[in-house]
Image (cartoon, rainbow, N blue to C red):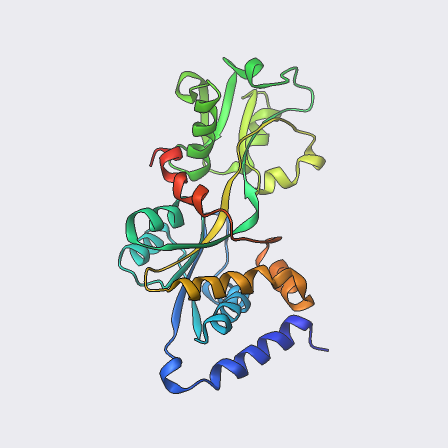
Length: 273
């Protein structure tokens, strides 16, 4: 038996393919899942086709999904305006698209992203003040989350450059360094696999950063205000139907937030990029 989402997608496809020829020029939705995705192009297209069809239906246009596996591909597509829409993490890419290339904010995903400061379950460290001067383990400096955590700690009076820090390529290595006494304090993203497994691993969160927009969706400067509003209305309505809720579950977000535009625009300056 077809699921509600499958039925919705078939109906959307029929509606879109029945449009007049002049309305059928495809818009391109560029997708990036950062370094944590691991999907191939075909699976990404399948995963986000429902979102593309929701946006397409709101605009009365067809929307095609293009996977930007490499950050260089994402950046080039934004700079050259090859993507009509961009749904990407890490969030600094859509944020810079808005700041530098005329893209417009549409929405971000719920919940927001945060930097979590964690310690081992038996650690005596209870807060950031007690973490000063300890041994830290962090994602590699070029990563978005390293910059995110660095900005948060800077605002809290802890310059990360003044601490003893081990850099790791994968956030999954952070608990290993703590458990094996190589480090005392770790930095991870709230939406990472590490963060989602804290209940099982027993690591404690001693600090949560300010919230910043997660997985933003932005649109090129060619979209009108009424078109942006139509997309936002369609995204806000997703939790109200079974098909919409199934779509959200498929792409791995709780809902969309159309109120975080100002915070996204301020993000690059906060990060220092």
